[in-house]
Image (cartoon, rainbow, N blue to C red):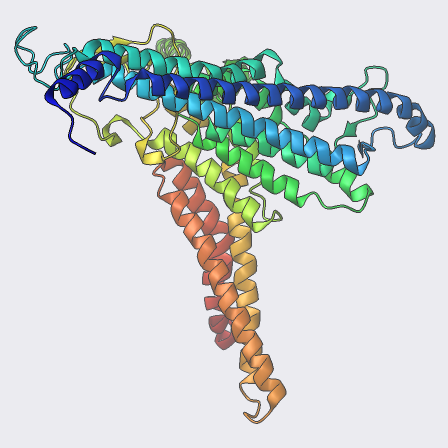
Length: 564
């Protein structure tokens, strides 16, 4: 085509400055906003339909369960306390699984889109108003710095762009608002825990959903917690106390019901431990309050310790009667009373710390658990303790002011320019990334509480003793394999059966060596956390249950043999 004339080119530039940014105009963005609104509206309608169908299914199943509960009580008079799965046809079960999956997918995807648009709008608010923040080219005045590419000051364009992106995020946020309005998280948790089908008239009969529905429920909550991008969304999910109800999921009831029907609940356990890992990766200094609590002080233990200390002090003699006169005895009794009062006043009140996430993960560290389940649970426990082991010096941050700063003050943060900023709303400032070395250190009070909780002797024993038990068992198997190889060493090389058996034993030896290496790597990760009390107790357990009986004691056998 022929080149445009100068007048038409000037008219094109004039229109470009009026209609929008870079000549694209807001007609395209208006079309995009309309398409976005229509897409979000369709997703919202689908979410409404799915939630309504799931609620109808839950009510219908509950009514059917209440009708069948009397028959079950008459049929199982002696087994009323035994949990049983709900009787659902294959179609209803498949629909429930699909609805649960689709709810998590719709809410998570729309929330991420809204979060992406919100972040883009915040970035534009911070520095998208021109090259100097004033809409001018170089910031030296309203006229100076404007070039031919900025016929219209970009300040208004940036404001319109930010407003447009915020308006585009609102339709997607409506899905999460509907999710909160209908309390869908409570519905999902009640389904998997069986509370949605409970009957107050027959509390002894515990009805549970099928394993497929329970597994998908846990996966749906895990998808929501793992994929949300807005801090306020994660704050809501964790602050509703429904996640703690799911942490206390009675898996033993599922195993009992599965055993009665000849099924296997191992997949449910695997997904549940993965859910615990997802929660552990979302813990930071702002979300820790939903997992760690301080109900009060343990006054009972304090009283018992005071009585025991007083009893020990009374049993201590003050001296012989011949060597100590009456005045000396009075002075000794007086000094003892003063020391007792001082020690009582200096003794801190012992706090009760509740950490359900750590306690539940610790239950799956037993040696009889599946290898994946046990290793994942141990990593959850170790990651939580690592958060407590990190301190302010470990954070790669700029130098702070030399003024005194309270480590317990979460709401006052230092900025890069040395000033202080307050979070007046108390909401989280950012979503945890899940990367441990990027997480800021916890307040000192919370770090001490986590370390005291994890370093309790009973909990250290539950964490370390399964590892020592597996090492002991595996070393015993290694010893048996070595003895079998020694017995085959005298066999003829032409014996095909001996050669095949020797090859199998060598393969078994390689597998055992790999398993031993995995256990030693877990022990190495545990000791590298750097908590002194935890390391001391772990080393004592390893020495007492593994090193001494399995490695050192066999070395004494030749000495006993030659001495006899």
